[in-house]
Length: 198
Figure: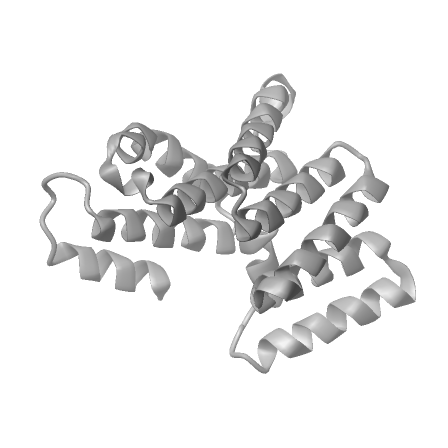
């Protein structure tokens, strides 16, 4: 539904240049791809549009630059965590995620630092370092809670529950699923894959 709404809305907009409306369509379509588990589609859309986005005045606005960088990092991490890149390109996607993390941290914006931690958690998990992944999640959750980014925090807690496993982890996942369902999130696992891949 989100994909259709974004596509329908942009039909009424000019295709000349690259405006905020085009940027928001790009974000919405990437979010849809990640929610639906189509990481390679999100990555391809990101790469195909990156030069235009990077050259546009949109990315001179810090919020848009952070959002674009975070979307790129999440798409790369989703490809990596889904195993869609193959062994030969694994390092390329790891570098992409690390590059996004570094760019987000350089902004010094608290919310960018918090979501950078989520990317690091996912990357740590993909490289087999579960303890580091949990530590990054704990740090990010604290930051997200302080910023009122409750949906991201819920997804991070759900991811943490998955990593911990056992009865404690299952209970955490169930708690976050219930919280999200009470807020009209139909598929909590898909929401987590979209916001906190890895």
